Length: 263
View 1: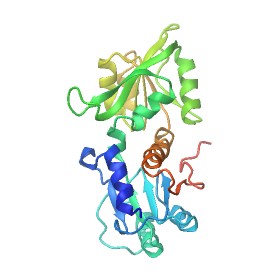
View 2 (view 1 turned 90 degrees about the vertical axis):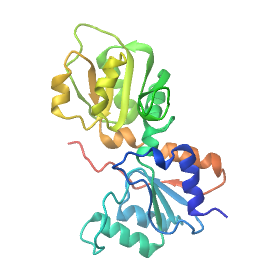
View 3 (view 1 turned 90 degrees about the horizontal axis):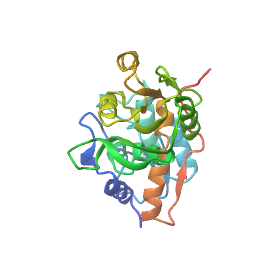
């Protein structure tokens, strides 16, 4: 018998909860860790429709990247999305678990996955928790063949399914980019680490105006959508869980899509 806590333990062997950022709230969000698990639905964000999808597909556990609950709830009256989802999950007997910054920090986690999709070699953690550690945020490595900035943007958009990219000024001349750093999610704060380690381009999301302004000429910034940079978490969860439970019912959400539309 596989219980909900067994699913969580498998994920935590790969991405331990103690590695989460202090502001994060990864782990069990709603439900009963001791219940027998009938199936797992994988997603980035939990919505009411996702809970309904899980129930309809015979899954009584949802593993999401983003926490459903970031802050304490003083009541559950259905006044916002979080309250409605919590109520629906409880009514439906669906347990919700989040693996947020632990999978961001794990070796082989979000940024490492992004680096591998781009075919980078000699991948290392961009901002390790301590010297010599692979645990930390971001990744950096070398392209198999150097590219122009325009070529790299095209490759990034294709690799991560981002229809648009916000970019800093193109490098002067026809400079080829060979060393690339990245951080899935909101990772602009690590641009200085990327510059210090010799990256010529930095891929992340949610970059504020001043980062583009302050680092003109220092590094080529490619800002893709937050969802696009982290949708790979579903594949990471699937890989980890299918290795531990090879014949278990694991499902990607069929209905989840980016909440941001590009017009």
